[in-house]
Amino acid sequence: MNVLVVGRGGREHSIVMKLAESARITNLYVAPGNGGMSGQAKIIAIDEMDIEGLVKFAKEAAIDLTIVGPEAPLNAGIANRFHDAGLAVFAPTKEAALLEGSKRFAKEFMEKYDIPTAAYATFTDAKTAKAYIETKGAPIVIKADGLAAGKGVIVAETKEDALQAVDDMLITKNFANAGATIVIEEFLAGKEFSLMAFVHENKVYPMVTARDHKRAYDQDEGPNTGGMGAYAPVPDVTAAHLSFAMENILQKTVEGLIEEERSFTGILYAGLIMTENGPKVIEFNTRFGDPETQVVLPLLKNDLLQVFLEVLTGKDPQLAWEDTTCVGVVLASNGYPGAYNKGRLIPSFNTRSNAFIVHAGTINDGESLVSDGGRVLLVGAKDTALAGASSAVYNVLASANDTSDFFYRKDIGKA
Image (cartoon, rainbow, N blue to C red; front, side, top):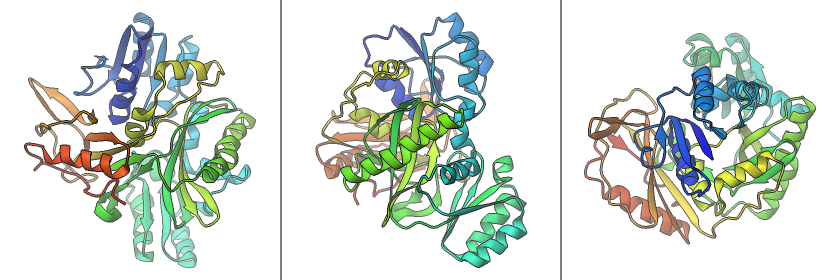
């Protein structure tokens, strides 16, 4: 089969790495890809938002299946366009992807279908939003309604921070149209975890759990990022917790989407928090999480292409998982998630047999590989114990010849 992966980040590199193991694939393409993917797939210079260009290529290259990684083309309707062109695609339609594309829609949806989540209110006017914050106090959570590359969420520890976040979104418009509407939520205390699942209509096939670390610095300090590291599975999530999440969150969600005539096919991601009343939804994504994918897919025993094909045809893929732990730590450009420099030489590492490197923001510059994004790459490792996997990752990072242009958290998988 000929397979195309759409996207350029670490999530897509991880998908490519897993698909490259499949004996069923004749040609594996990625568009637009990144500097680290050329060893596993053929790089196609088509932007992920050039949907017509991707459709044209898929026809010309006789692509049998396309897998879409990032959220922006999903919300722009790439799956709809592929369907119209008679092309097989593993991705939700624009209508279903709105579950991630609009936090307001997601909250109203959860309220309608009795899916556990934080209490909330939505606003387009700064004065009204601030009055609401004055009555609720802090801590409190302010979210941009639209897509903001994982950075449109402010967990305000003080009322002053909350009021500033309202100004940043509704007045200064730091998130452009994504912040034209904001959602203000109650703060939920507890440990977060991610639960992803392969979905086709009302069939849900869950993956192992993962825990992502969003804050830029150690001990969960600093600004929110797209994710600085992750590990899987999460030992404090019990079978009872998973059963509750499956029944009361994922299953209710896919059945609600069918009711709304937004039937879902693709990857459903639930960002959850463990409260004293059980798991509640922080957010939904309608694609593989990043960096969770980088630590979940290495634990999958199945042929990933076979999983996609079986899910698409309504068959149970009989997912099987390694009885090991995987840890991944992101190497980011200095300054991220704020302003950062590009074109910095990527360090060289001494990798071990149980370790691997997933590229995200890298490009080829002549004979050299250089940085081209905030999150540059992820170093991952597997081991029978969380501590062993974490230690292996940090040994690889410590072996780097020069990381002065980059930074990484030192505490992923250690607590």
